[in-house]
Image (cartoon, rainbow, N blue to C red; front, top):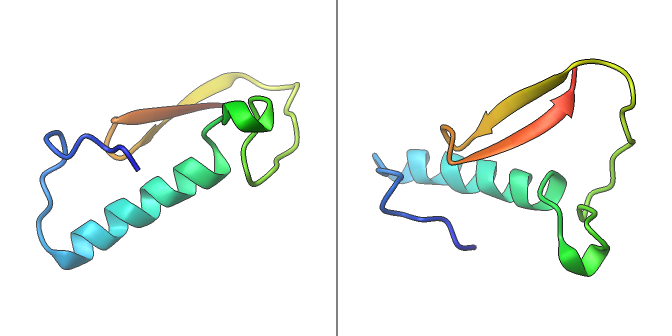
Length: 68
């Protein structure tokens, strides 16, 4: 994982666990991977209807855009 640790201030073990869990969910379920032809390891259905919303991940370090 290449999370810039200078941006996130860890406030204890439980906080670190939440950060790592959130990043793992983002990395495996949302983030696209070149080796998977721009897919995610956990597949999801393509959403064609609805407005596009931005969801902050790791307090805005990353963003996920999806239809709502």
